[in-house]
Length: 278
Image (cartoon, rainbow, N blue to C red; front, side, top):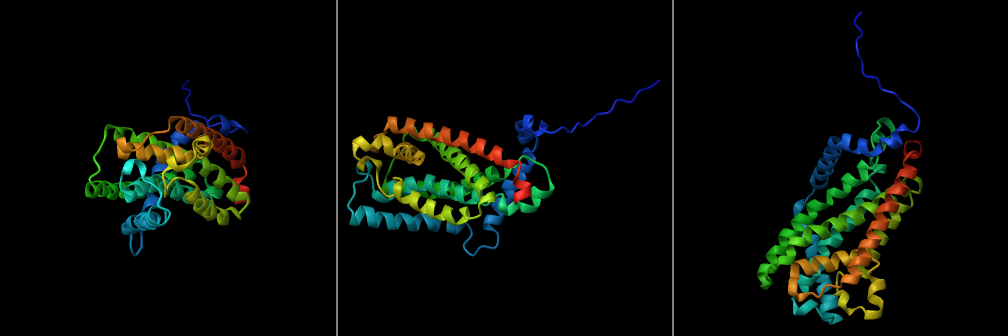
């Protein structure tokens, strides 16, 4: 008697939580598809297109250079040109800010997909965050041109730049998971995010050097994880012109890890109710 072997799919309550991280890998093609879709949507039918990714940081750099460099007369790191110092900080900040704003609405913007198809919902905010790296690459190309214009030489520290890019993305992922999950239950968060991004721009050392912060407050100031990221970018790109503050860097890493752990935990706790609330 021949017995035909068949694969069986067993559905039990609670099994999804045990296989969640395996499912993230199993749905990697969906992740790549959503990332590519978000990239296309970002630049499709836009007047300026990619040019906007150049104009926005360039105009912000000019404003900050005038306000902090000319009016406030704050010093630049190591005597480097003020526009170069500002632009080196704008790149990671705008990558973080864009990622946070995109991820905050990632669940709301995919309402039909969430309510009809099963997949790990964490794919949505993370895929929207990765697309912000495209704007970063465009800004980075512009920064290389600025370095040549201002005669800033490259140093070995530039090899460590991917480390700080990863820190910026992980900080955005941790924060984005929390905000996107809360935005499903409390739609008012869509109005809070632009304010938080604008507030963070001025309290982070984007338009000025973190060296102007008094020494007794600098470690506390570094609890803002983007402080360590921005200082790291300047250290990697400007080399000997920047004195790297290692205690602040370690504090920023600790906050980044805490933010990522809390973000994953909050998102996983609230995820089971997304389909009903959205």
